[in-house]
Length: 211
Image (cartoon, rainbow, N blue to C red; front, side, top):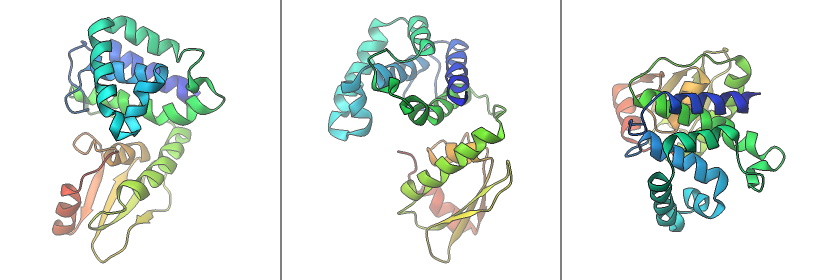
């Protein structure tokens, strides 16, 4: 299953680095990222702050508490076992829908945060899922972009998708999984080719991405 392989890959990546190792998440160590993943699955109140800004401070405090109280290796082992039985992520279909891409991105946060920029091998099924998510995310995060953007997949090849209007166009081309990382704000680490007129490319480069 795609979800289980991404969970395993994330936990393997976490186990392969020190708890103080940097990640692509600004200001987060590997221990911080593990705390985030564990809270998201097992603490509904703290998880609310991930998507609801007024609750951000509570979530940040809970993350700090977990980092202080939970040994890193134990936390990673808990993540590897999956969410608690009472977690909303145990509802049918919920975990696969919410975690497959989440775990892929966070695995790359860990790997590439330490300077490993070689993409992991993926299969067409996962790339097709990543492509669907990339299109949906692009429509969300690029809705106010100063230029139009073409998304152009190369693994496996497919028709490009245009996001936005206007004469200034930038093309993002590469594997769907890498385009997805770019849209999540991991620009410097994503293996994506960015082409267009220099002014348009510069304008997109200054535009804040991610969620």
